[in-house]
Image (cartoon, rainbow, N blue to C red; front, side, top):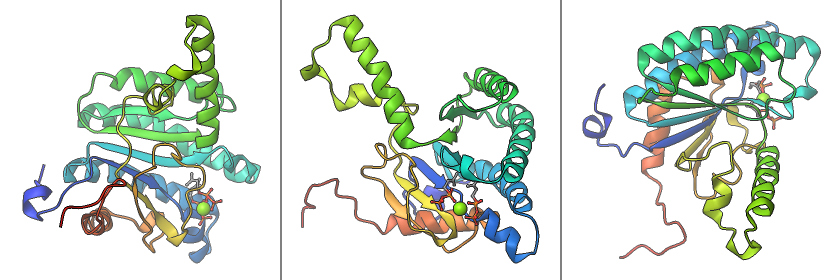
Length: 244
Ligand code: IPE
Ligand code: IPE
Ligand code: MG
């Protein structure tokens, strides 16, 4: 691993989130079907995992399919699920080679049984890996995640007789799909769109945001380093005041 911290004098964000957007537009520019863009996007994602690890990022969370993406055509969804199946199949091998721990965020409801089985196997097979923690937000929506968390928390509160005054932010965080993982320091959304589209709403309270004008299938290590460089110019105050 190159030490980018020393080499470029960069403060490397511990946790980076990426909303990978622009696959459809990338394909359209080439007069190709949208799923051609998704296929290329899945290849870029494989590479970016290695790159993130190489740069020294410890947690990478990528948004690949939202709870709202079911609104798309059956043809596009079928294509996406086909790409996902292939991706999951290869992922175990790659993850174990790179010592990467994979975790899937999002709800299982709505996903086909074979995909759920593959996800569970992938998580179990990589659970003891100690390298990059790679979280894939799939059939994920932050509001859905919070509602699921509230349901689980309420159930425990009733069972254990916890009083409402004793509910804390930390306690609620522990019921989210991201439990145990620090909040993202930097969230990148490709394609130039400047919105969060239901990604990590709770966890991004103090994240820095970066919106590069690049479509996801054209994203690469250099673009990632540039985003980290811009992040380094930010002044993170977390509500405080910097000493002069
Ligand atoms: C992102 O690319 C991938 C998914 C949301 C599944 P898009 O498919 O949203 O691409 P654009 O935004 O239409 O270009
Ligand atoms: C956000 O992208 C979801 C993912 C990248 C998985 P979309 O392309 O679905 O978001 P909107 O519709 O532009 O907000
Ligand atoms: Mg999009």
